[in-house]
Image 1 (cartoon, rainbow, N blue to C red):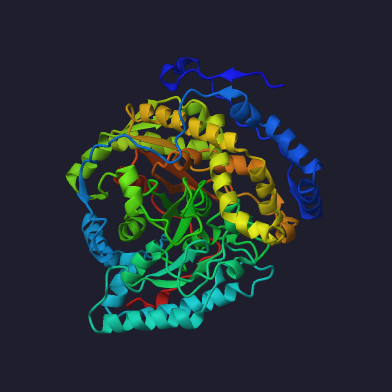
Image 2: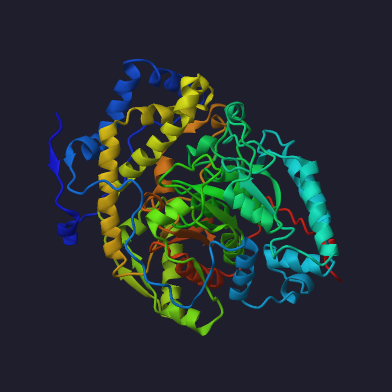
Length: 610
C-alpha cells in the first residue's frame, strides 16, 4: 500500500526547502527483435498491465497521481492572468489579412541590404533568408519556377537513398511546379501577394495541406481520414503565396522525440547523418537545416518543434497555447499542442509567425489573449527593452545535462547578454519538476488515446509502430482520476511559474539536455524505446506545453563533436514579442554557423550576378 502524501497549498510552499532532484527514468532501452518481443508481452493480458504498473511505481507516477492529496482544483486548459502590453512593439490584427500582417512584420525588421547576400563573396556560411529569395525574384535574378526545379531534384534524390531517409512522406512534383508557375506569373506581372510569395515550405504530416491526405506518418491513417483540406495556418500561408513542397516526415503520430520512423525511413540529421534529427517534427527541421526550404510548420506538444530545431541547428518557435489555430490538424483537440514555425533565422520565423497567428474564436473567448505584437527590432525602444530584461536561471536544473558542452555554451551566452546588453540574470527555483513531467505525460497521452481510440477499436492499433504501441499501452493504463490529478498539478505548477514571472521576464535553459543522439542500426526496422534519451531531450521543454507558455529555441553553437546546441527562451503568456526580441540578440551574439554535412544551395551560385 502506498503512503498517503499531502501537498501543502502552492502559495504556502517555502522555496528555500526545495531541493533539486536529478531526473532518473527507470525503463529498458530496447531495439530490434527484442523490442518487438517486449511489445507483444506488453500487450498481453495480465502480464502487460503488471509490467506497466511496476514501471509506473518505479518512476513515482503512482505516488504523484494516486497517493497524493493535491489541494488545487483542476485546470483542463491553460488559464492565464491578465498580461500587460509588451514594450517597444507593433500591434498586429489577428482578424486581418495574413498578407497585411507580413507587411507589418517587414517594417519591424532591420533594413535589407542585398549586397550582403547577392553581391559580396562571403567566406562564412550563411542560409538564404526569405528576403533574399524575395529580392532575387523581384530583381529577376531567379524565378520561383527555376528554384522549384532545383528543389524537386534534391527531394527526388532523397527518395532514392539507402537506407531510406526521406524528408517528405507525401510529395507531388507536378503540384510543386504548378504552384511555382503561378508565383512566377505574379512576379512577371508585378503583383506578388506578399514577401512570402514564392517561398518554399514543408508542412508536417499531422497538419492539413491540400492536396495531400494527412496521415501523421502512419501507413494507414489515410484510410480512416480522407481530409485533404488546408489547416487554418496553411490556408493563411497559401494566401501569402507560399509554395508547399509536401508533407514532411515525422515520428509516427508525434509519439516520440527522436524522429525514428520505420514506416517511411528515419530522417537523418543534416549535421551528422548517423544521428537523429530529434522529433517529432523531424522532417520540418531537417528540410530547413538542409537549405531546401526557407521554413516549415511543425506541431509542438512536448517540445516537438524546439527539440529538432535545437538538434538540427535552426530556430523553432512554440507560441502561447491558442495564439495559432489548431483547426485542420490531428492535434486540434489537444490542450498542450500548438502549430509553430521552423526557419533558419529569427527573422524568418517572425515573418511566418506573423502570417499564421490568429486564435480560434472559441479559444479567444476562454483564453482572453493579449493582442499579438512584434518587436520593432532596430528601434531604440526595443534595444532598451533588451537591456532591462531579467533572465531567470535555475542553476542545478540548467546544469543537469548529458555533456557540459551544452551548459557551458548556454552559460557563455548569458554572460554575453549581461556584459553586452545589461540583462540581469536572476537565480530562481522551479519546484515540483517531477510532478510537472508526470502531469504533462498524462495530459498529452490521454488526448492522444482519445483521438486514436476509434481507429484502435477498428483494429488499426496493431498497425502502429512498436514504439507507438508501447506508448499506447502506457496511455491505456491512465485512469480518469489520474487525469484529474494531473490537471490539479497543472494549476499548481501554473501558480509556481506565474510567481516566478513576477521576478523575471524570461526563463532561460538549454533547449535539450543532450545533442543529437546516434541512431542504432537495429532501430531502423522496428524502432526503439529509450526513455533515458527521451528524458534528456524533453528535460527543459515540458513547462511551455503543460502551461501553454511561449518558447523559442535558438542555435548558439556546437559541442566538441560539431553537433548543434540550442538555447531555450520561455516567456510569459502571450509574450512572443519579448522572446523573439531576445532571440534576435542571441542570434547576433553567436555569429556565423557551420554548414551542415548535408546542405543544398537551391538558389545556386551560378544565379548570383558576377
